[in-house]
Length: 225
Image 1 (cartoon, rainbow, N blue to C red):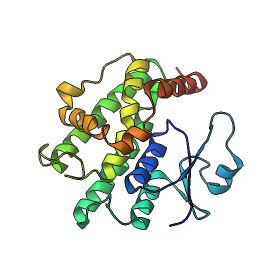
Image 2 (image 1 turned 120 degrees about the horizontal axis):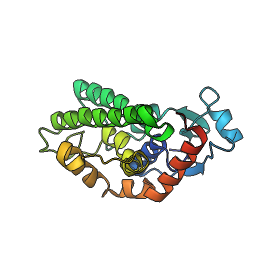
Image 3 (image 1 turned 180 degrees about the vertical axis):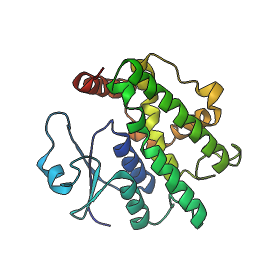
Image 4 (image 1 turned 120 degrees about the vertical axis):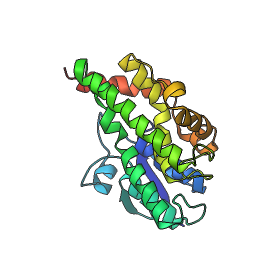
């Protein structure tokens, strides 16, 4: 199917989802790490001149940008072991919640970038979003009887949200609080434990230390009162 290259950063949840998607399909790819805090590469600026950000997938020399669009492209080009459900309503539901999950980082960013009340609001945002995703998982997994958001198969929304498993402890560490997974979000807690045992996820998710280092660098650069 041609040459595939991904430009991203190892700690980006958006880039992680793209890499997990490729791993799930068994697609061979070249990876280029971007250091967005120092200098974006000329190739990144050439391939994503509109947003100038990662991830970018280059397939046979042609760029595809934005992680959700990239995942859908991967699912269409390598059209086996489909990420999205086959029925239109279930596909629309998966896309809706994937879009919601894809805004998770932006919603909770004040935990990393702020202090005081702004940081507290970031914590509240995180817990509220987890509660909504707990409800979505309950409904989409038939009251928890199925293992994934996609039902019995690891799919689109699972791929989009599982990268945050590498960020949860970082949010707790920087925000000095504890996410009550076992008591408040038991389905999500069990779901995370299942997902991180997948080979594709194990291969892609970075260590806590690596994510924390990047988060602290970001906080030092952009911290606001």
